[in-house]
Each structure stands twice: as structure tokens, then as C-alpha cells.
Amino acid sequence: MDIEAYFERIGYKNSKKKLDLETLTDILQHQIRTIPFENLSMHCGESMELDLKAVFDQVVRRNRGGWCLQVNHILYWALTTMGFQTTMLGGYVYNTPANKYSSGMIHLVVQVTISGRNYIVDAGFGRSYQIWEPLELISGMDQPQVPAIFRLTEENGIWYLDQIRREQYIPHQEFLHSDLLEMGKYRKIYSFTLEPRTIEDFESINTYLQTSPASVFTSKSFCSLQTPEGVHCLVGWTLTSRRFSYKDNVDLVEFKTLKEEEIDEVLKTVFGVSLERKLVPKHGDRFFTI
Image 1 (tube, rainbow, N blue to C red):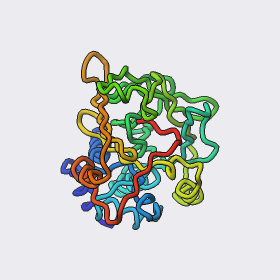
Image 2 (cartoon, rainbow, N blue to C red):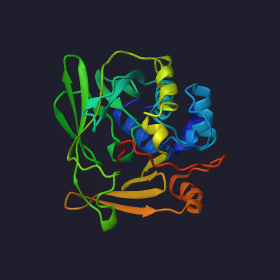
Image 3 (tube, one colour):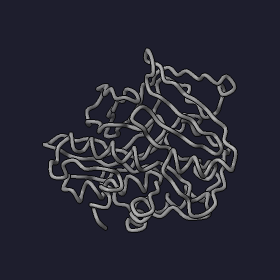
Image 4 (cartoon, rainbow, N blue to C red):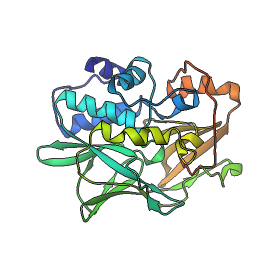
């Protein structure tokens, strides 16, 4: 696997030797704006692989994206290869309808240590919950970013990531009550510990998430990509575009329902994704907001 091919994939042409916070932030932002958070493979009759070589082939050589276990795995590899001090961590995602965190460790997170300071780096949560900058591992401190204000809190060795969101304006009235809309201003995202993990720790959950009827990933096909101003999301046949803070601390959220024959072209032009097999779009009943 060639680190230069990764840099070319994400369009990164800046310093590759300065192992500082500026470089870390730059790498993260390049990745989230070029590599989508998506689960399209499983809705094309393919499996979501964990093996690093398979992920590299999918993400770098075939210009695809992936879910957190894939895109954060490739980010972990890239940062480690560059020489950053990295640790793979495991997270438990908050389930809003159930009002609790997942019982299984279903989210991969990367910790990076720079000059004795620890940061959380995550390129694999997508939608409007995606961080745009590394979060310093400090409990109780608000960390404002373009998408929202993020806050990490530690209690008895468990860290919690929360988000304080803006108001949102939806000009298309028929979508005001869409199940895709996040209605809460204060949003719990996930919890994690600082126990080091390996990719093998995620093997069983990787299988479960793409086979269980209870999984949101089997219920919905999705693709999400950050832009300099906001984020695009495609869930089933519904395309949404969010512009962060377009006026007076309000996000603009626009909806469009696509015809099935439009989906391939939208994937190419909006998300940079060309599928090799036919996608079967799906918008099931599992909770999934943008």
C-alpha cells in the first residue's frame, strides 16, 4: 500500500513531515471532503470488508468511501505511516429512540498524541455530526467548530462526545417532519474508553452490522460527504444538502427526492462515487438522521 496514493486520493499536497496539529487537521479535512461515509457496497450485493488491503483498494484505488470501520481504519493507517503517535479506540453509539448507548462496540475512533496532548480524530461519523477538526481530550470544555459545538466529558474512565447544534431552516415545507431531520439541539453522539483496540476487535460487529435486520445499515442505504460549506447526504432516494450557519446561527437544509434513474449520476457528480454493481436504494424504518 502506497501512502502517496492515499495523499493523491484525498488531494493532499501540503507538508507530510510536520507531525503537528495543523497537519493533522489538514489531513482530516481533506479526507472527509473526498472520501464519503457510506454503506453502498452492502446494498449492491457486496460485503463491507475490514481487511486493510481490501479497504485500501476500495477507498483509494476505486475512489469509494466506507463506514467508520473502514474509513477510520484507513485514516489510522495513514497517520501511523506518516509517523503520528496513534491509538485505535472503540466507541458505543448513542441510540436516540432507545435513550441509551449501544451495548456493542460499533464505532472505531482514532486517538493521536502530539507533544503530550491527546486528540480524538474521527472521519467516519458523517452527516451533520462529523467533526471537522481534532478534538482535544479535555473534559467539559466546549470546542466550537464549523458544524457545531462539540464537547467531551469524562466520567469514571468513560468519555462522552456530545454536540450542541444550531437551529435549522427547511424551505421545502413538505419535509418539515421528515424522519431524517435531527430535531434536538443537544445531541449525544457516542461514548468510548481509552483502552487500545485492534481491528480484529471489530470483526464480529462488522458482520452483525451488515447482516442483522436490527441494524440501521441493513435498513438504509446512505452516502454522506462534507463540503467546505456543509454536507451532502443521500439516504435511499432522498438527497439533502446542509449549509452550516448560512445566516444568524441557522443551518439551511434542502431536500430533493430523486428518481431511481437519477441516483447514479448524483453519486458521481455530488459524491464522486461510481458503482460497479447496481445499487438497490433503501429507506427503511430504522432511526437515522442527517
